[in-house]
Image (tube, rainbow, N blue to C red):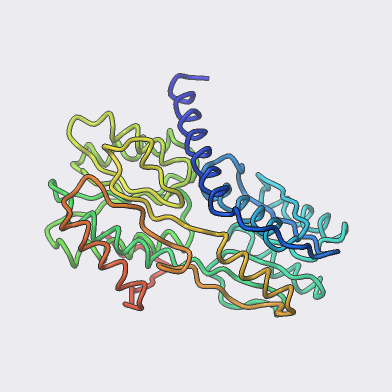
Length: 335
């Protein structure tokens, strides 16, 4: 393993440790008496040790077992092409709740839910139409990225801001557009550059993309990556002039306190617990909006003035109270 790769791995393990400690501190209540006969399986696209999206899904699954007494199982690093086989194995072994932790499984959920009407399915997606036995966690990421755009607009000194994502999913396109809209409103002089690396978890691709943005003058980077954010951190730390970064899913500020502005953090335990509770009560399908103040928060804002931090927190609270943020899912509006 190269020194860079080894460094990325060490950083990832550090964040994972912090995430799991936080989880254990937040779930110390009494365990549920149990729900005999109910089994839930979760299918995840990546490793549960990514300290990020998949870790959060796994932690939420453990909370369900602890608080609701449901027997849980999980399968990680499941490719879309293999998801149907894994799901059918769960269904064949008596699992009545199947959670697909990722929008890439959307088509599979719609297919299986129709074929297995007695089971309940959970998906995280921007989907709008589902069979009656599907619960959807609608990720309103764009609402959370709007305050990040405000922060970047206020903090930048070069008037050039970068956005990095991996996969061109609608969630990340709408997040890019929301951040761009905020930058236009709060700093019309600032330029906005963006890149999709093709991989949420590749730190090398992320570092290369960010280095290109930094070379063009970007001094604030908004990240919509998972483990790939570690490459952004390395690029920011190696830059000749100060570069500040935001991260996503979990608070990663401990990795580089002088580099991070804030993190848009997600709590998947909240929607998963609410949904499984509803399923156990007989409600087979529905929707849970994951948005600011509802499973989505900002970590403490650092490396800027108290005035800017206060302003950004106020914007976040306005969005949480219902301030509309345009949602454009199908195309990038930034030039």
